[in-house]
Amino acid sequence: MVRESSLKRFKQVVSEDRGWRPSAGQLSFTDLLKHLVDADRWALAVLKNEKQIPRASIQPGEGKPEEWNRHLRDFEKLGKEKAELLKRMPDNE
Image (tube, one colour):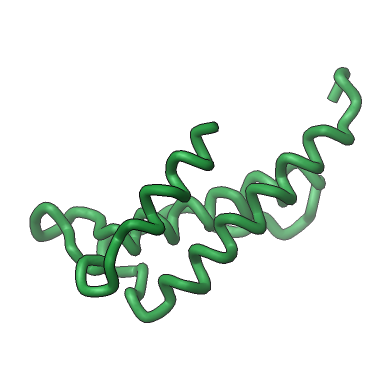
């Protein structure tokens, strides 16, 4: 439910506002979206016991507004992938 709510809100951000940040040194909408995608990739790598664990930290300005659509697609796709993986995992894991 939280992911669906976040996805709904991200879809409402118009292109000219994607780089907006409350003040210098803070994360923009794009930074936040990229961070959530990176966190999904990190969580999936941990859950799958992968040797290479991607980084999931973000600095202001790392998210590029021109990559918004890709990040939005990844956010949706990775959420589904994570949900399916968790469903298939035994309770003791």
